[in-house]
Image (cartoon, rainbow over all chains, first blue to last red; front, top):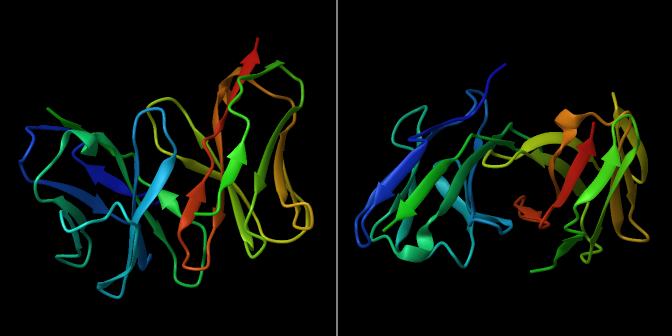
Length: 113
Length: 110
């Protein structure tokens, strides 16, 4: 069964460093999302992406964040200058065209020291 | 942000019993609702989606939606210890993003 994959599974970085989190959505999906979950808190929407552009972004998704689809399979989330409060699980999700069900990847645990 | 509310639990049921999980939401315009299961340290896994008033059954799971009362529920029949997890209720807003509740932790006692 096709699934969303994410790398790395765990990323440890120093405050102020740049990180890139990678996702490979399910191959026939065209809608891509990033969510995050701070330990013990709700899953929160960050950004949605369709047709090579951002569809919507949340208040969390400030100028430090960016997304990119560099090729036909990868979807990346970049945090330019990490803060302690960026420590969280980051989930990539994707959905088929004209379908609303979103399928989540296994997540990347980001730890900012 | 219009919220999705869930009782945090834990909801403890014996093996073989029916577990009933509830969720309320405040945005009357919501049309699509989802139940995800999340094991500790893992990602949300889609269990059920429901879009119309009434019941929708899939194996041991039944989702119920009542738009007039603004609640969604999930029934798990013949609960198993492996069902022990946090169950997340989510609604989709008009821009297709998911808005999650904080989840209900379910414990199924052997």
